[in-house]
Length: 451
Image (cartoon, rainbow, N blue to C red; front, side, top):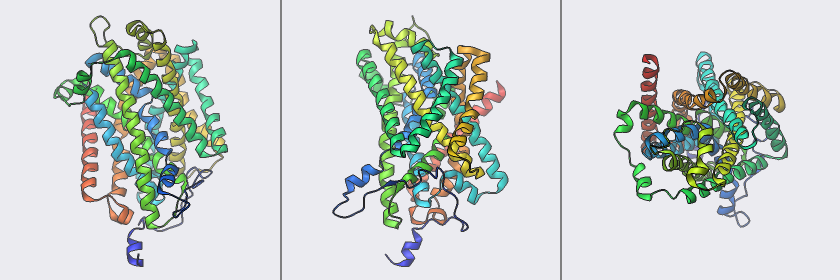
């Protein structure tokens, strides 16, 4: 490749002093096998597997459970189409995050800081922190509810216990990022196994399930259904995951040539798509479980995780059903809270360039989420906590445009990513998905203001 074409493939972010890397202790810490006889394509591809699953747990966190349970118990299988559409959009947006991280060598927060004015960056940081707090609220409260259901631990005490996941993050990062990935993958696998058993016991009607994936007009015309649909979009397409993914893909030490970057983008995108495919199956399983078990006249709407836990075993006729539901909820809360804390670290470092010890950084990030969670559970108790789960997902959806629009500005224009920028057709798809998200949020804001 000649010098001109090589330069065209180089990211064209503004020149200046190189930004300190996010999560410096694990940046480029995992070696990718070299090309040639000793490094097959399959081995190199597997070297990129891992970050996608850290991102995927955000798509099956307790906030997803709350919206999927509410949607399935109230409207049956109808909102499965929204879950499918949301996951397809998520795959596109996460592919863009991969491209930014590997193509430009910057996470989304760093890219914003390099390209936008100080006031705009401050606004984006505030919105991102609101999204992270909303997400972590759902994760912390969901994990606390899981501890309460399985072990009878009071909700407030359970929220305080979740602070220990900071110690887990620090311990695993000290051993290497692969350890953190392995633990998260094990938790995701546990969730998958739990729901596989639930589906086997439920045996939902296949025709009704498949029909639910076909969009219906009432999703838009029914205000209650549309409210839950917006919540599902917010629960599925996580704004903080775009920051997280663009940073953790940089844990791989690959060849820094145009060809090496293209291969890294391709393999990391495969990892992300496969992981989000698994998240789609789990999200759909939650709604199918709610629709099959709870969408019946004698049960009524099930909007609380505790209700679902108590009703599952009697309705399915299997004593273990409720226990497996609680175990899966606990695993979902733990895994997503770990990655939510990592996202908070990345945002803090990228926007504010705050450089402190990993321990203090993790504790500060966790405290931002856990203090509001303690306040809510202490004041409102279990009922308020469950209502907050659904509302937090609507808040997340309303923050999405402030992460998606900058991401697409950087990844659909050659002036930023050179030849690694998306082509015309993919760019049109990305901007169309972004326009849909913005339209849903305008509707939601109007609904909240006129309520």
